[in-house]
Length: 391
Image 1 (cartoon, rainbow, N blue to C red):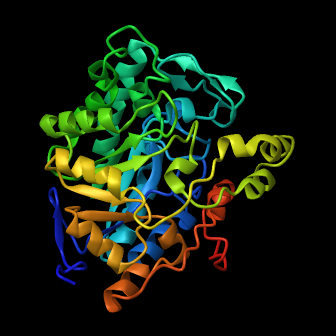
Image 2: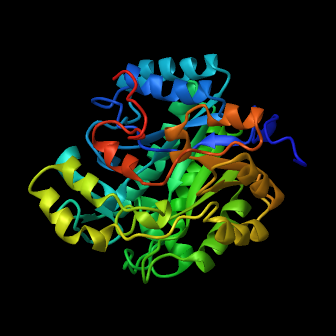
């Protein structure tokens, strides 16, 4: 090892105890939009296991911006629980980040009882509903709500916010030429399509200044024909750097709406999803699931080659996501100029993996990338190979 991988490192105004961030993996542990003991226990386990910062996923900036009806929305009723959550994580010596955003076309109106918003009208085959085109007034409101969410995150003890502009959530859907067919100031040119993302990040920076860290989670590629791809991502990353609105970028890929496995790689858990959602949707998933849950071969650090191109384009600190499973992988990321790594499935399998790697540089994750954890989001996200914790 040529670098102290597990020593302190700066992220904006923060000093994190190491380079490993627990990636946002939707917990489905909030209830009625508020923090539960189960949600606190989930993040305490990861904090106790040695991560520098754990990310709460995900906290919607507005009620229609949820992907299900239980998710946290930034409102006064949630405030006391959020304070309990941040204080519990801090007692374990870790920092805590809130992933904030608006689900856009990924939202499920069956759960939220509100129309999902998108750049242009779109039929969501997962929800079997048509979205509503976001108006200028909607977008002005949502941008302001990003700032309000960040302000409340600061007030309730979060050390950072991760602004979600990936996976074809609202800001990402505006970036996509496939989903954005507008001919106003929010459509057409890349500069116009990037307006929602950049305005949202600016609202966050204006709200919290440099008092907490700001990360943007941004797609490098949607993984669908006609979607947002790396050449445009390089330009958007450059603009975000010039805007001065973030302290780091976490580069991701895939579309929760159209091609989720492009991010995850490995096995497609079609049978598990079909069982989890029940009938009649389960039968449909068994029949046509392979069209939606396409399989891509897994390899360690599978987003590195695309992310290296972003690394060459900007000087901002970068978080490498995707197949980080060992101390050797963390070292490779650092050697290629990445300041941080984000780990998701590996930490679901072993919440104490970071502490293990710090003790033993040869340690690597036991995760087999079966991806059956994906289907557990309906009942509480976990690794199915691990005995369930207290519920």
